[in-house]
Length: 198
Image (cartoon, rainbow, N blue to C red; front, top):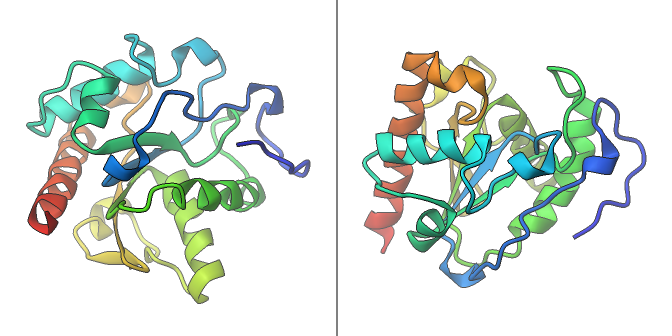
């Protein structure tokens, strides 16, 4: 997968990164969409205990899904990716960049024929999916509003159930206990949803 767009701002294009591990595409039922890759590629999701993986593993364990690493996460039917494929330069990512990168995300999501859930980890992932939804149906998949107010609603993108949640990476994850609890709950609800579909 490569990006052919040159009109992205607020990101470091040289840091372009997508999941590089071997994937059983047919086995993926839930795609966890995070925000953007880290500036240092060594901190990306991997089997190693990177910063991204430590909090992600903690989130799964908090949700009652005992995992020790990326292989365990993938073994239970999850895939992890990012809405934006280049590291962000500042705290916020421009809307035009999210919209532009959502085209690449849309192509990526088509690789998973049996996916039933998109777990949207944070505002950037929610915005990216809404861009894809507008392109496909002319309307948003997730309504406007604070995540804590809308996260319990039932939302769909075509036949895919969509769960808006909070970002599970970054230093704030361990500090903001209420968000951490909501993230665990959202992962658990997504897991229950696919378990009922099995």
